[in-house]
Image (tube, rainbow, N blue to C red; front, side, top):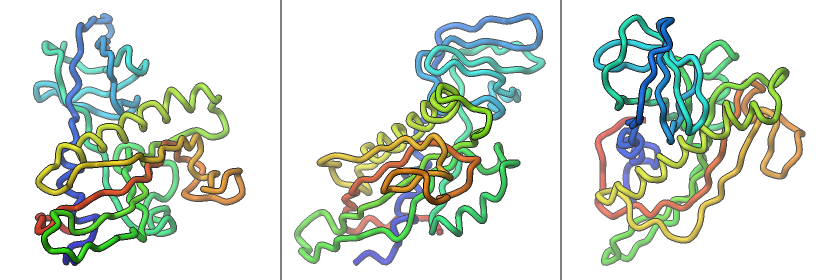
Length: 235
């Protein structure tokens, strides 16, 4: 059985997520804002900062998979730049909820990829098999939400669409990490949580999971970890 816990083994996978955005055009709006045409906006959300050629910009508006508008004092001269990385945590819902705290936290704690523990690990003792453990994991990909004021459409545009992209890029990073993970097989379960604080796996709105200021998607899948794939990282 591998001496490293699942979270530690997934740290390099999270760091391999493709943060690059490739846009097709940029419009100078004339008021220190610039709109990039982009058919895949990934997890870009208004309020976060991005760096373009060493200059800092704030995302002011996102039309998912159409355009991103940023504000800054220098006109951007390139059409490709990286998004912010987000955060990867693990533990119990209660403990992570305590760390997240209240709603006043967007840039320094979100978006969040949360590995819900305990993870179920099926250990393979056949030393000839390349797969050492099959770990069944549940992840939550979360960003902030305004539960009282948002419409259902707001929840889709401002949370579920970008967080589904955050989830998608994590799965793609898993599939590319062939030095750590075997072939992903079977299926995965993905669910929308328009208000993650008011959802339970059995449906309904009966109990707070995190808090009412978070929304996004969950992902449940089995990850086949290769034998002898210790990685550098810390929990």
